[in-house]
Image 1 (tube, rainbow, N blue to C red):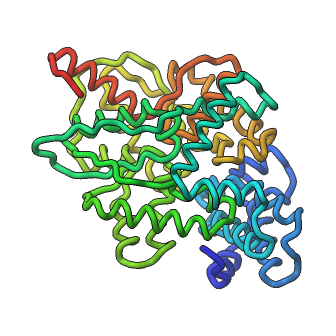
Image 2: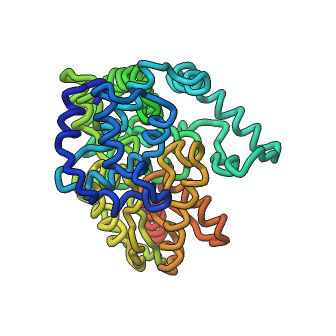
Amino acid sequence: MSGDIATAMYYINRCSKCGSCREVCPVFSEMGGESWVARARVQLASAAIKGQINFSRRFMEIMDSCLLCMACVAHCPNSVRVDRLVLWARQEAVKRQGLSLIKKSILRNVLRYNHRLELLVRLLAAYRATGLRLSRKADLFPPVRVTPFRPHVKTLKKASLLVAYFTGCMTRYVYHQTGLAVLDVLSGNNVQVVLPEQFCCGMPALAAGDGQTVYELARRNVESIMKSGVDYIITDCATCGEMLKSYGELLGGDAAWDFSRRVQDISYFLAHTVDLRDPAGKLPLVVTYHDPCHLKRGQGVWSEPRKILATIPGLALKEMAESDRCCGSAGSFCLTHYELSMKILKRKVENIKATGAQTVVTGCPSCRLQIEYGLNQAGIFIPVVHTVELLSQVYSLTDSAAGITCS
């Protein structure tokens, strides 16, 4: 919803002010004041549209404190899209007041250009290499790879499907092991992968209210990836997947809608679109699963990762309490609202600890980074992995036992 007053008012008028959102909002749970709950943001948006209040610092402080986790949306009896109202408010603020110098520099001068983004990553890697930490927040910066993820993709003789793999910024610059696992599992299921030129999905710009950058990145991705003539577009990132699926609504036109219809999260693709190869090797491991907000509530994908885990012999899934409660990452939220984010994360870490699991599994690299940080801070040193990494691991055990060499 970009500047659409009619749509905003539609959601505002659906709010019955019942307060159901108070029960599930992670921010309200920690802050405790009415200003920080969803129904307050709905009423603030209404007042702004009617000209009763302006886009003041306090107004934006409340709108910027939303995680966009959609817990309130899922719990709302009237299906009020509070996340869309918050995004509308942020975009309106940018239209009226512009972006801050830092945001403008990053979003419009770096994020739109891959070579500039790679340069920024190299600078971040150099900073980490110095060992300097200017604040506690610095440890939230991931251990970035100087060389982006550019693997050799195996060519299959008779593939059943052709897919484009949208790696996303986190796999491209941080979690190369996830990317290798995706390629391994897809080739192991006779799916041919291509890696067309791609750009940031646009979610960081959307969350910041920079509609101009969102539109430009979406346009470039559709234009580049649709040239490859693929059957599907696969993502390993919950956030990227939700964003890519919104391109049809964002851009309009047949190409964008066709693009969005082809987007599938890797777990959904493996559970529904291909005849998933059953692993024969054993992986004796107790795991617990964290549901990313953008995967469960954003894309409606939550049973699929569990189905995949259930195919792995020897693996036991022990569900944590509130598995779908936000971890507090929300992209850059953990940096801009560090103390609040850490309070929300603490609850997630406690729920993980209570399971006694040996490994945490999730389907979002941003959540992974946040949970890794929280566990380390709590002195709990267990790995956090992507679902597909475990499947790849057990496939490797199977193939090794059978004398099969995988490239």
